[in-house]
Image (cartoon, rainbow, N blue to C red; front, side):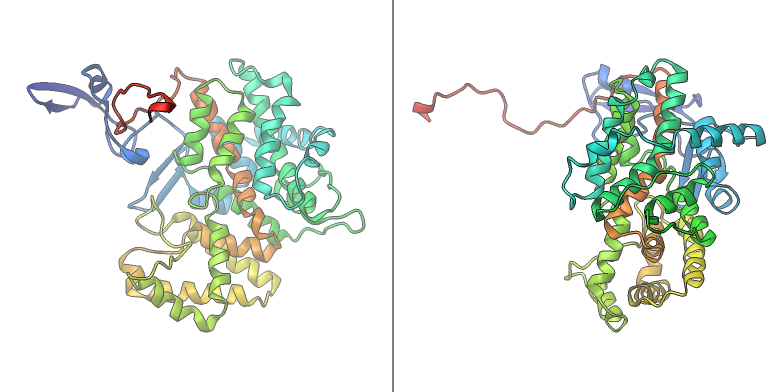
Length: 426
């Protein structure tokens, strides 16, 4: 507590409200006393509400800062690996060599899924959206791994975390293989995390897949840049589900469901759909004019961010990665050329610059994933894969400390009490 207090005056009542200070960021006002006086606070979208205390991730949207356990995302994305970032999010500190080797060994030990799980996939239509499949399969993991469901047991929580991080690439690749009618490809322990995922995606029994190190590095960065993003909609959903004492697999499945929305995890998919709608480099300038026309409903996807009022720090690294991937592959793709033209115009146009509508992480990640060969409907699955350690870290943080079941209140504007009317009298 900072020692400062806010005072709320309601009629002739004066209510003292404690003010708390974090290590960085805005102070928060404790409003619990308002409930004791018979009032609720009203905050649609929870834009001004701190629902928890956390030590995991900090965002300063005005300054374009994103820190994981205090480390800038730019440093982690360019100097670390995804597995190391997973360890950092879960444990609070970067690992030494022995800790990292032990953690990586644990991940490799759990990459396979129960063989019976393949029959679960057959219950879905081949043309089902991969996010629908992933949501169902991850939720079903609790039916296969009964030995780690005691949320009060720290060892069970650790094993569940390892299993989820290790199996997500396998589950995601199986979602893709099932949708295209190809056999599932088993993980290989000698490959690193991202290389293993790419091989499971693109290898077949007829021909193995030689992993391009540039693509593996790009995939690793995409995972890192999506690993956590503070109290967003899906993370808050995981915490809310966890507050009911639900098992970790159910909580992560809830997060996947929340991530599915086009306003959240589906944004990079929306970018590619927008580019397909534009169709040609020749149409970019007319599209931009429509975006700037207030009477037109056309939206520019992949630019700007709800939190960042400056350049998205993740986008800087993602742009560099995008350039590396396109250069390494030598791709001549009209849609990618179109995307670069749109970026060029938006970064120079005063309309977008003055509104700080810079390209965000979704704009570049969609281009990279398309270049790698990831199908459009799998983009959000990739996001869910990358976000898994962040979800688990927040779930663990909540479960490891005193907490209450989440119970938002409401401003009720419906009918007041009235008596039932028999059908004959209506």
